[in-house]
Amino acid sequence: MGAAASPPMEGTVEEATGGPTIAISLADRRLYLTGSDGNVRSFPVAIGRPGVPIPVGDSTILRKRRDPTWRPTAHQRRDKPSLPRAVPPGPNNPLGKFALDLGWPAIAIHGTNEPDSVGRRASGGCFRMLPADIETVFAATEVGTPVRVVRDSLGGSMPERPAPPQARTLPAAVKAVPPSVVRPQPAAVVPASTMPAVPAPEPEPPPAPVADPRCATVTAPSRRMICDVPALTLLDGRARGAQERFLTGIADPAARAAASYDLIQDERRFHERVAALCWIRAGTEGDPAVAAAARSCLTTALERRLADVAERIAGLRRGMRLAGQP
Image (cartoon, rainbow, N blue to C red; front, side, top):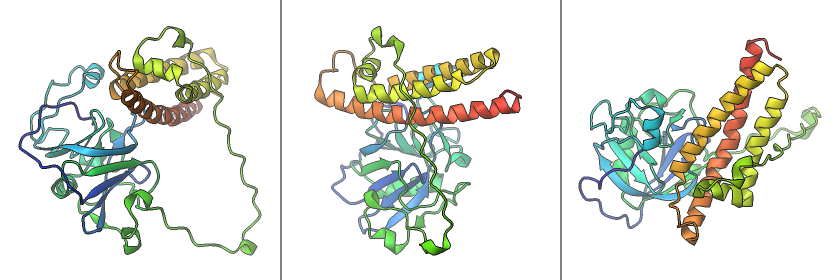
């Protein structure tokens, strides 16, 4: 669940002067807490559900909130108008009892009132934790604690079901390596003489990019940046190319129209989300810091978009096969 902007936190928390660090692995779906003594503990987390941009890179804890009030973002209320403007502390609060607001807009590490979602791709962009785990992390960190989110595995295991609430201590070999460079242990080596000669499969080429025809008229700063920055245009174009190639391969007009509608709706929701997540105030595009932050945010969102389009197409193909379509 994405955390909305909130009033200043209740109480005072001193700035961190060193000590604990946090690393979150999207591959593992785990949070790794390194204490000031060097001990590393890991906890399962829920990450953004398919189609939701997940921030990657470095940030810090900007604010700590105990018994937070949850305020849905404008985007969340547009998607679900029945949401209240605010949910006070209590058993129905999606943030649970503790929230750690990060440097990315509307992104936090927090508890949850849906513990079964932890360990899954289920949130609105935030990192959900089991109640006992977020209480542990909340107590061990301070405002200013560094947070790094990476796509790669950091050596932990990703359970099919949420792990028990207690933290798990990593092996000593992992403790000695900073979270940013932890890697999975290599598998046992099998002598080449005992392995059958199997040709490696040819890697599938990336989708050929297709230009966005609306680039000639868009004016919103974030959309304009996607059209004007070549690296962003390429990522956006590859997602479009994957969709176009998929639709071209559907012979039945009715099935093609239905799949096209689904993909158009996905794209519309994506741009609504990215406009909120990577928001740029009109007139500030020339500020180097603003532009750099926006490019980083858009790169993460578009990379995730490319993966989500592939997932979505695979799901549509499965549905067509079940319906008897080619």
